[in-house]
Image (cartoon, rainbow, N blue to C red; front, side, top):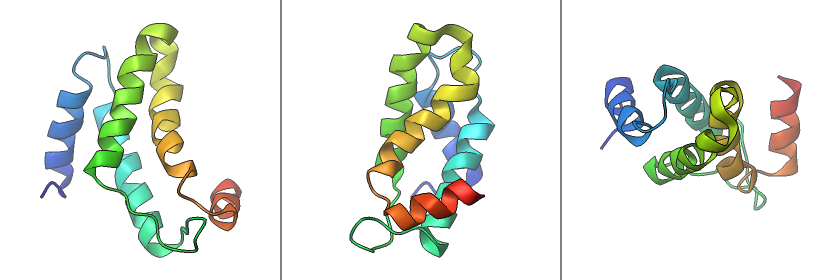
Length: 103
């Protein structure tokens, strides 16, 4: 299973290999923080803890690969987070989203 930072970095680097200047470390950090938050505080619309998997990460990278050519270099600060947020917003309850907005 791919749980370590180094393994995730290899996965992200491969998944974003077609994206120039991909912020691999930032994507890995964001993914790990989202997984930790899911365990500690986040709830989905059914008041269950959301499940973040490699599939979630893979789908977020798919979004970034598709969006990067459309936005040029501006994607580097915006789209990796949007790609992941697109995956997680559907899973989270309003209470979880509100607690995330306060931080």
